[in-house]
Length: 358
Image (cartoon, rainbow, N blue to C red; front, side):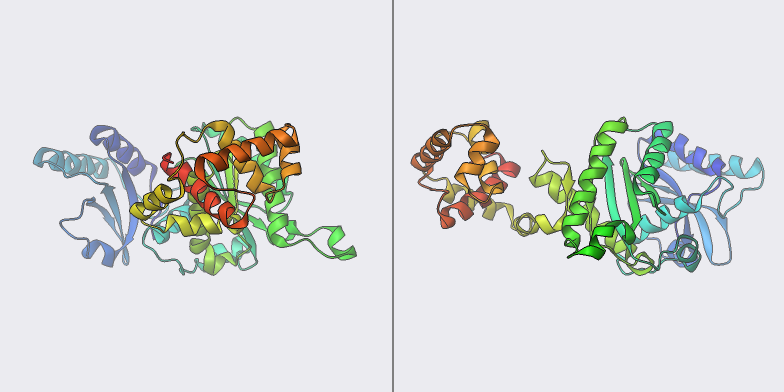
């Protein structure tokens, strides 16, 4: 299990990271991982301390060390060990959330999607009960004091037992109780679909953070899961959803998997096939897809190809919208008021966003 270790080792890793310009971290490996670490691995590993079943390792990512660099690292490790005893286990400043983060990232990086969490965390955080996995990603780096502010805002928003796990790259994994999906109205009538409630929950969270916090964020979410045996898979899903959404819908801030089925399918298609499709659909198009046309089509599809509602949304006269659609038909040979052509153009619009080539 990887974990953040003694503060002195972390400081050494930070210094080496500045010297080499590559990521350096201190991790706790099972002894078998250390013994089986390949000599030709792009990640250089140095033994720091040993326990019965684990070893503390200094890991330098994606950097082949010269003879002098190799000697320098060994010298610094010897000096650090000579300065006093180093705890090879969990450091005094480590929190269980940090340990959980390191375990989670290691399992995810190794592809262990069905890994079960250590029992001590399950009991402490009640992770055998359903939780809603959500992923926040900030647009810019966040200073530590602002991260503390974020946690307070999140706790205030959910008003219930919330677990926040800080991840690399300005991301936070939230595990909210499933009970936030239920309201008093659910007992009086037909409850809303969970997907709709979750989408509205994300919209409310984004609106609150956009008003109260320093940084713009994007949010992805998934259906409730039992974290004790599905947390790694849930992290994978919300990361995949966020990446997919930002790839195809960069103008949006909320990404939910049940609205990205078509995008997920298109992402699996090889690039040559995507380009071939674009060439076929837009064979007769003689002009670039300008911003006005793109916006018109986006709104038209979002409103189920309803001419009147789209005109209202765009604040234009109905005849103006019809003129734009007729013009697009003349340029492309495709009438988006017909189902077949609308499907073709919808797919082409998604691909256009990621290729920028009609």
